[in-house]
Image 1 (cartoon, helix red, strand yellow):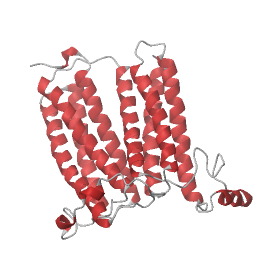
Image 2 (spheres, one colour):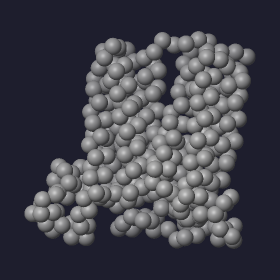
Image 3 (cartoon, one colour):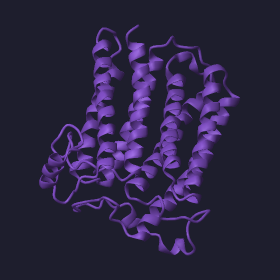
Image 4 (cartoon, helix red, strand yellow):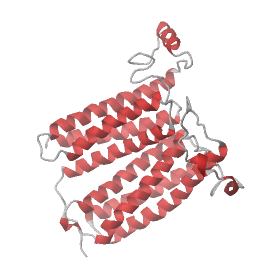
Length: 326
């Protein structure tokens, strides 16, 4: 137990760093900075010497070496690999404990995340894989947070049964919106609409749902997107609509929790409200300022923390029988 707590704490911090680096890699168009996996142009690090670069470009003639993009990608891989090893250590330490469900889920998920990282490269940034990789990273962070709380003494929580039941649809709304955000980013639709409140004039008559939510199979390369402008605008519009719905639903739930609870749940509800308002503001700033890098990375990072906090709330509500009253 004493060894597990600092390991899990370190893993949470490292998972946050990996999420930040992943967003930075994607937003700097470095997702294919290394055209192979897990190395880079056949090397364990970015080729920098002239003869190594010549060798690399001979292997991948259609993908000349761009050192800055390659380093963005490899640094992300180094941190992600370290996180994987740390989660393996957590799993091994947890074998001495009676509770191994979460460590087992974590280990399985981080292995699947590694596979998604490989497919991101081998399938040339297919949007489904990119979106799945994003959701997997957020899930890892949330599960690590759950395990951290599982290692703490269980607090006595009293909250209405209805609020426990409402947690699941509220979480579903938030996850659906995050998936929409991932789909928007993976299809390079973040700047498909740059007018407020919805999109450019005439947007309603140009909606193209069939193409917007197609899997787009069969392309050799998905870098910079394969959708038409109307399809990208449709994805963007749906993400904006989802943002308003999510703001209203999650805010209403957080306020209800804040009014009907105390202690940890009340504090967590306040934090969810703050993160929700910050996330909505960052989304508006992305449109008004045309997706500045730091703002876009922050938008991704706050989303990860928002879902983590909501998941922790749900865990605290359901972890013991005393957590509800009629």
